[in-house]
Amino acid sequence: MPDLAVYDRELVDADPLIDTIVGERYRVIRKIAEGGMSAIYEVQHVKLLRQFALKRLLPELLHIEEALQRFQREAELLGGLHHPNVVEISDWVTLPDGAPCMVLEFLHGNSLQVRLTRGALQWDAIARIGDQTMSALQLAHRNGITHRDLKPENIFISIDDSGDERVKLLDFGVSKLRSSDGSLSGLNRMLGTPSYMSPEQASGDGANVGPSTDVWAMGTILYEMATKQLAYKAPEVGMTLTIILEGKVPPMTQYRKDAPPAFVSLVDRAISRDPETRIQTIEELRTGLRAALEPKNAYRLNTPVAGVPIVLPIAQIDDAKSIGRTTGSQPLIDTPMPSKTPSVSTLLPSPARIAPLPVTPPAVGVTARSNNARLWILVALVVILATAVNVAIALFL
Image 1 (cartoon, rainbow, N blue to C red):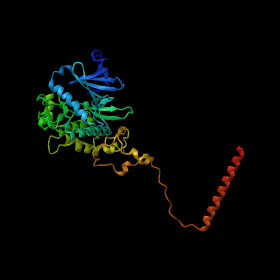
Image 2 (cartoon, rainbow, N blue to C red):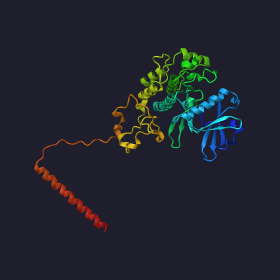
Image 3 (cartoon, rainbow, N blue to C red):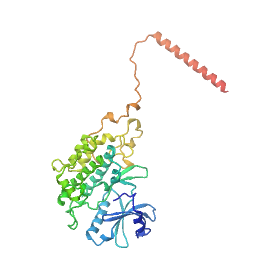
Image 4 (cartoon, rainbow, N blue to C red):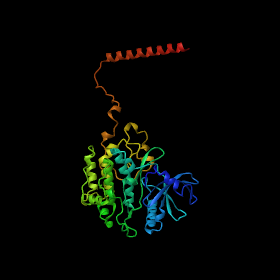
């Protein structure tokens, strides 16, 4: 699903659906983008005056049964995945030409693909985006769904009205159900985007496509976020697939000298062709990412990692209710805490903000005479202070 902030004005003006009513509930405002099997429109609910994104199947695909089934299955999968990091579906309508349409939440922001055009990401951003994406994948995998087309274009970084960022996982159009054979009609067995395909996808082995397929794709995305380089790329699709099946990935440190060794090792295991070395579950990859990068993200309070309680410096803890919340006051996701947690010293405020503790002087013996002297000095100070106060009152009166 392309960036919702970018669209072709000429394409908008030429589209016959502009300024029409869809199912008497939505008014079409503009066409956002078109590609693959669908076109995306910005629409407004006639009664609520709220914006939504309408995704319709392209007219030329209406007579293809497999396309219709895939489109409907995507809507059903989205309807069954209730997660803050999965794009929400709210309605299903049919156009006069018979085209089915999904009504989705309208997202403001950019895709990860657009974000990567600016350069490699900082480690805290990699930790946050990676964790939230894998949080959504965990739910999908628990429901027997493999995304199968995980790529930066389908990872949308949305911005809500308060300015907070949140990942939204998009486009389940080629996802695989655990009980299916990977294809509805036996056509197009090789599904996905070449540079992010796992070896089983690249070889057309649909029977072995499963959760580890998304692990592989997530590993290539982590590599790309850190380096701005594709792990597997070639001028032609066939050459790219050959590299996936037989080639080697350039060392991450070749592009990113400051890459943490634990992160490098994690990515290497995620995209390993050796079944004994390769990470098999998204839970293991997510836990490893937290262990490798979480300490660098401890003070990121604006957009905390999904499912990880916010860690506040002691001086900022005013209300126990402020702990254990994620962005947008969503409840915590039931995921395990990282195996490697910050030490107590890393959770304390920096030394520059810590007031020195009062030092209690050692007890010393004093004579009664010194105590009497101190008492007389104290009495004298009290008398002087009282006199000054009386003089000030008299002057004001």
